[in-house]
Length: 455
View 1 (tube, rainbow, N blue to C red):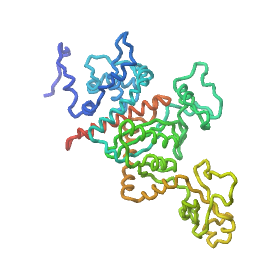
View 2 (view 1 turned 120 degrees about the horizontal axis):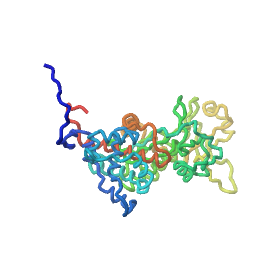
View 3 (view 1 turned 135 degrees about the vertical axis):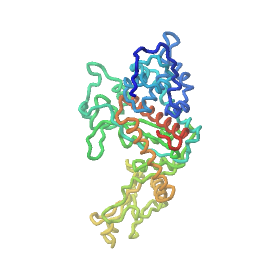
View 4 (view 1 turned 90 degrees about the vertical axis):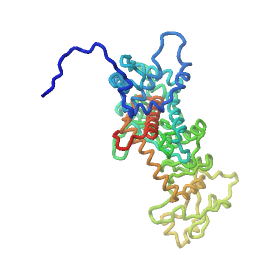
């Protein structure tokens, strides 16, 4: 017989237990077990007044932001609605069934004020790293580094040429992103091709065959044992900024966390001579990166590696046995011999090349052969010697862990376009996202799903 629910009178009293409504294997229960916010109030206390009405609980705001970044809720308006409706979110945020939800404007007010003044989001991220270290999830032997471009909250149509003088004040005054840009402007650096009026510190970039857009780079330094993010940095989408950010991250991890890797893994962008010299000569780290090599030739003529270097005489010897020198005459004032690119230029004499039987294999279209050698060639030789070793081949596999984190960041956490503008806005978003990824990593590894259970 078909049943029918009768009666529309609501129950007068309800017995409701929010704790019982959240499943025992819920992701937020696992994250709550590893989340450490014990120092949050002490760090923020100097930035609150001792008088006036009580503020919104800062721990509540941090927990709500973590919910948003863990579940890819990009809008703070929508986040407030989701926390209002979702029982698990309420439980994680320590809210009762009848507790009010903060207004969405509370987040921006605190983010631009006391959160940035106390650098609380950076502290939150480092707390997750220390938790991973206490749980034994950090090996410390090998780090991998890479950068991924995230679209800025800027439309290319709202931009000006980089060389133009622009009145940034305007009739309505400058925005926060513009003030940050002007405050960190380097007058000696060449101007970019285009500058966004919405987020001028971002940079125009493009993938091959795709339209250009303004973007920021999120730089990750990852421990390869369990792909724990050890450090994160926001930089404009410029290749040289990636290597600078990696150096700062390695130094910061060593200084603040006391961890220094034995090997650093990266792609060709980190195989420049200056970066290799920093790794080998300054830090004593094995460079497991492909060389940024421009000396090899594809026309069949002798490459740079075919010329033997004599460090004592500072000369090169060609396959024909002739000597290449930096200077073929003596100067009254000694020459440094290093150009602005950090290269030493060696030249053979025209007499030696014209009578050489190997000229067609060496410099068929030139009167003499010229070869450049980096001042950091010894560090480059260290990288060359590591190529092909079992450890290097394993590092090539380990580097994929960084790429997987970026894929997770964009596809699961939905961070493929920034909401906030300026260097501080990009840094805030990247630190929160990295903290969420570390928390999810701990939840997965420390509380594994039972065999046969579904996620």
